[in-house]
Amino acid sequence: MDRFADIEALVAVVEAGSFSAASERLGVAKSVVSRRVSELERRLGSRLLHRTTRRLSLTDPGRSFYQRAVQILADLDDAEQSVGEETAELRGMLKVAAPLSFGLAHLSSALTDFLDLHPAIELSLDLNDRTINLVEEGVDVAIRIGDLQDSTLVARRLGTSRVVTCASRGYLERAGEPLHPDELHRHIGLQYTNISYKQHWQFVARDGKTLRGQPQIRVRANNGEALACAAAAGMGITSGPTFILGPYLRQGRLQRILKEYDRPSVGIFAVTPPGRLLPQRVRRFIGFLSDRFGDQPYWDDFE
Image (cartoon, rainbow, N blue to C red; front, side, top):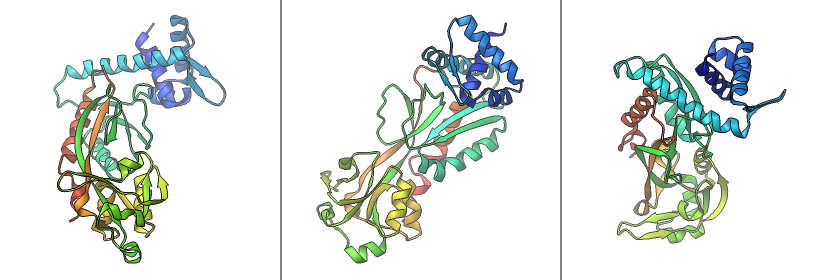
């Protein structure tokens, strides 16, 4: 009886989504994976997976056991790697989640470079603007931008991004340029829906005073890149992070406005589940991103 092999089989099935995919990942026959999971359920006296012809899903006991199983395997992997030097070859699965726009524009190239440095690392990447539960979904590290809502997570700041307000030259020629947030009520706004209206149109004057604008919202989207494209097409004014808007400003597709009333910068964080000893591959990956981005990131170089 190999208890760790049984646990590894369950985790592989959940993360791969099927017994067939898990068997390919583990390099054993599908029947072996199925037998290991069944043996684990028999030993525990509880069904861990709902099995149908169309999909697999965890039962409530299975979800609880899976969360602990991921931790057990991570701790075992870290214990094995800690025997070697810090410079020893990293290996194993790295599960990363990040917002879509940031992931496509900046994280993807960083991941490629990290994988080139560590060829034994496997990667599972989830690019989505939704806020995921790291523990339930077995994610090693997630990139979060802005205020962190879940105080139980362990966070490390990777860098910052300025927030600027922009519009296309065509829009400004047609509608005029607002010189104060109070003038936004005469303009069309493009609203990012993952933050509140109040947050999106809040500005800070040079004297530290907080001001708010009230544009007429024409386009709402939960993705900043979509709003940048709409702004570049002359559809209105957008306000967002420079890791999205920086290239548009460098290319002249957008122009900064309300320069005296910028919004506060936002932090970019790597967050990990609480109470977990991080494997070396996760620690080294977070350090790699911190070195790459930092507090003076390349995406702010547009002026």
